[in-house]
Structure formats: C-alpha cells, structure tokens
Image 1 (tube, rainbow, N blue to C red):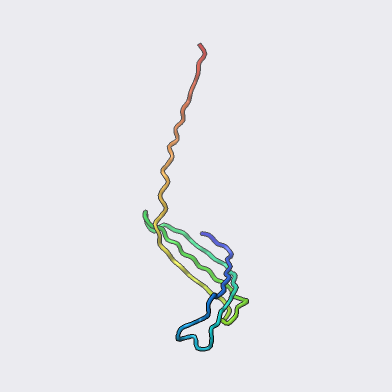
Image 2 (image 1 turned 180 degrees about the vertical axis):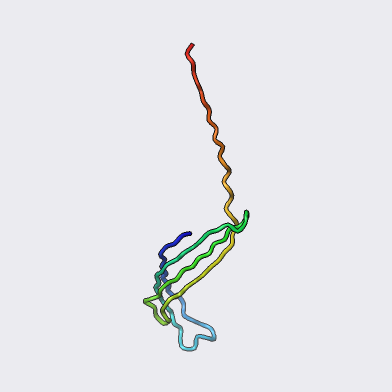
Length: 98
C-alpha cells in the first residue's frame, strides 16, 4: 500500500467547441491538491492488480465549478518477471605449509 499527497494543475489550451458550446469559448484553469492511496496486489501468477483512490480539492478555478473531485481506478497488468533464486555457494580454500 502506498499513500501520498498529490496535486493537479490544469490549463485548457483551446476553447470549447461543438454543439454544446452555446455561451462562448471558455478556457478554464484550475489547481487542486489532495490525498491519494494505492494498493498493488497479485491476481494470479501472471497478472497483478492495482487499485487507486485519489481526491483533489480544486481552487483558483475560472469558468468552471470548483470543489472536490474524487477518482477510483482499477487496472490489471502483467506481473513482473520473477527473480531467479540465487544459490549460495561457499568455497573454502585451505593452504597447508609443507
């Protein structure tokens, strides 16, 4: 399990377009900060899963509502290759005088 504090800076580079953009071409900026928690776990010998929960409190926004955004994500990927076990071999060398 991993936890951390995250941040988000977003600046829309081009204006809104399409049939829903009836009141103008807004370009919205926003800044957000908040916690994030993730968990990596084995699914099988060949696959692993990852679940992540993060939430950002948005502020300094323009042309958009600010507040809390929360995401829950889940993914499955190939497991990393297993490391071969290292064998321990000790060599002892004794030299006897003649």
